[in-house]
Image (cartoon, rainbow, N blue to C red; front, side, top):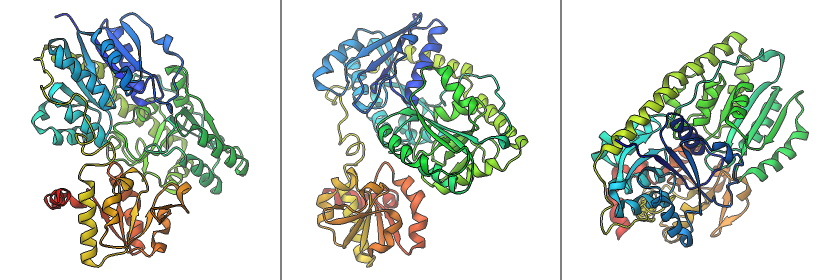
Length: 524
């Protein structure tokens, strides 16, 4: 059988992200085995700064292709032509509906010349929505965590046998023992995308202040790029002069130019920090662990439990809980060098067992061979090529039945006499519910939001306050107005709200037993 190349579509371009790292590493590894691979880098959105070492990717059997912005309707025909000219191929769409729509377009005309592999990178409703909507053309699914595999299987139960749990592979690295930690500041690093939504990178400045107040000597490097880069720079510049602990440092560094440079940072650091509110299976975390760097990571539902063993090969904390993160770092500084060395060794072993690259590459190649040998999967006639908001369940952040859900929940609160209400979230989800909230049967007295920059402002006349001030608003119940982040918000705040005497109601978690009522409400 003539092997078809693997074509990986990267709609965010050649930018800082775990998906970029995964794609480049896999394409290079396949090329080294003699199998052809292509990387299609689309022009990124404005808040994505491109990396600059693309020429270094050129090698035998690996082709790098530049393409226009995939979300621009004016360039859509050109994007389709670029992929059409790559047929026959096994195509890996990624991240956004437009990337999958390219695959659907090809499968509607040339199903005999295209095969599609659906990589499930993130524990995110939008990712699942894309993978579910484009199920007719996807030959196999590769989910990076057990939770991702379970969640995806629940959404496409008839395809459960085609959902494979396969964590991203991590190349082996030589052991790099650290110098004794008690003779120097503890070395901390975050490397990745600089964004507050999801990654919560601005919290690292608060962490520096917390460690400083405790007298912990540290050297914190934040490496990467993204939409919060400028604000992070400003916050660091403001915070650093106030640090009082000897040798305490915080520094922001640009993306590193090569994989070797990234590995050098992992080998330098004692601990890798990750404060995400959601992940699939963090590639940066496992890369750091492979270099013996101890992970101190947020306790997200996906990925962390697959590999972290508390106090044995890493430490976890609730996402966004900076005092708890500081506790874990302080605990590390109090351990003997023997304990830290043992944790470092166990971190390496865990990654070698779960993510060893030879085994990973073998699994990928076997999957590609099975996909190519499989039957044609043409795109169904009459089905829209591009998944729209209704197909995604409303949009990337607002399900179609959100209005019905909030009406039902507010109605039940009114019937039980549990008002007034504070809504948690001042973002797109809440704003999309304007009509339902305007007719609320229970008084709404405030909007809660974690972004302290919004504090003191108002939304539709309701004051926006930080969650710690919820009890001051006069509310008796907090309603979580979020879809993507509902579970994380509940994990971070439900207990503190309840301690303050506030009831907590969610629109999606609480409502599962009443979905029939909610659906009826949404259509009434």
